[in-house]
Image 1 (tube, helix red, strand yellow):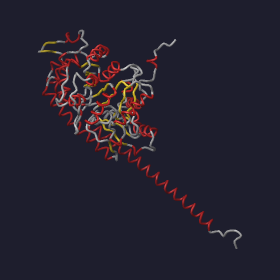
Image 2: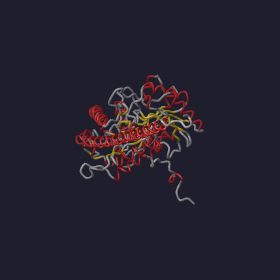
Image 3: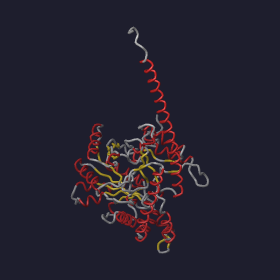
Image 4: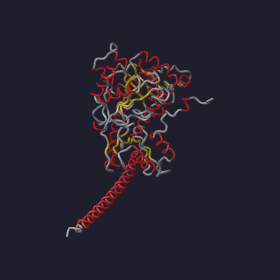
Length: 470
């Protein structure tokens, strides 16, 4: 008799992905400026540490919020006792107003349609439980966040069918790619329940165009399926074109509660990226479908946001002067830091996809591959992790269809650490190219010797007089 369940012993979690393996290697030998200067620098973690000083400054100026007080009186007992899993009304109101502010107040959100979850991971999984049965499928454009293999599939039994996007059009979604993925799912006898996209994209660091978003709405309307827009990077857009939320598209198309598509579009959000608070585990899902909201609210009891966290953040997000300054300064600092990464990569002879959002760049290292294969990509990745001591994420872990692309994060370290990482990478690239050039030079020399030998042999052979002709 088996002592453990199939779920406990199955290998569908995705923990053996190179994305997670890189983290494991970093944890064995983490870089520290003083304690371990030759350690591995973590560039595989999409974490925003650029505006912590703003958060800490606000906490210092608002000791009541951090000390769980209201008007100078302790409310610790109130917060520590039983909480309703619907969430604190003050926090839900502050959160939806913050979401609107990030979107330039072009759209508004109803606090009664938002469900709080323990991070975006929980929000995405909850939507899978609400929208699909085990064995159903969701279509995802590649490359996509490696964690989705865990978040969407592991406990739910839902399958992922890739929408293959390529570098030929900067990995944008096309109608052809959507239809091909849908037909592929049908070939696999999978019932497609929806499409899930990240906007801005992880790992591309780009925002979706208005054309792409309209294409998606047309597609889910025609197929009668759902659309999930994971918008956890919406506040990280630092360059034009700006961010367009799927809610803005619905508004432009005059979609309302009277239209079917209105209830089949859902949004995932979190404060992990925009506010840089992944440890607080604050996520949310937003849906226009009352049944989805009701079911998700019941499920949220398995992953609640603590009352203490909600109280603190409701005070912070209700401070409009703070949020306005934070959003602006965060985008400014992200832009500056991304520029430094791109500059460092260029000095190393490496280019990347033009990005305008996110905490990372989609970096093109195809010219450093020994061959145009994913085996060569993993070989290069291992050298960068073990020899160069930089943990970056290979494109294959993001299900990219083209070998040689890597996601490189830039907002989870100091400027000095980023500079060191680029120095290490440049030294590696210079050595690699020199070795490659020497190898090519030697190959050319050997080829010339062989050609010369054949020519000399042929000449000496042809100069001999034919037998019996004199």
